[in-house]
Image (cartoon, rainbow, N blue to C red; front, side, top):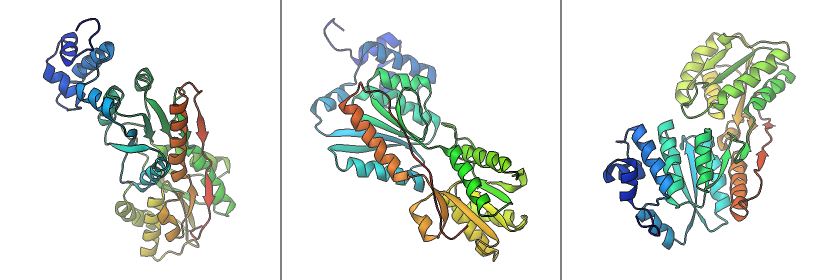
Length: 334
């Protein structure tokens, strides 16, 4: 590499003490690279300011602007609605939407390692995934404007949802409706790439129930997967063991619908025998006449786009934080 020439893949390989093939595998996110080797190659790329030739060419000739969205569980209804908000907001702009789905922490990290290098994105929105400081610094160092939804970081603009407050509101609402026996249904297992919001909802629910002079023993907590059929099967057995009447806070609308189906299977009356309160306000919630806590899913995506576009116009503006209010939508299950 001469003083004025751009760095090449050969220079990266030399600095990292690896083969050109290894550098290529790192750039292309192929899995047959040891983590320590990947780290060394990425450090060499960063230190040299190397841009892969194909990416450099594409960046030079592309006229289409692009916004990337990194999201987990792409098929989950709540994430689909958030993405719908993003797509609706971008539909009024010249930007193309590019979606990256995440299935593991390794998958997330590989995106965060390489996306800032390519220059193929004008900005990035990350839905419901927690970033550690290393990757936040990487995004900032490479000037890839990024907005977070649900999990904030002090150095990045974010759209926040107060999941613990949602649990508190659920307890308050059900208590005011006259219920004194409570239960909770949700999947509190922690995803390997982030703190699960369901745990925060349960924490807020349990704290407020205690403050109100009631209790939520472990036997009235059903840990069920985010699957409508599996939750229904578990809920049937769970409800057989419970004293009625009972008010259940389901951590998601999908699981609330499973409870409604289980109650019908057991010939329980809703809400006389069993009150059900969901969380999300999915499109299908109205069809099931489900009382739920609305977290403004579409709006969170729309606001994230507005924030990102404002930062692209003025990168030096201060970090923005938008806290979306939660709203109880009262229907027929409570």
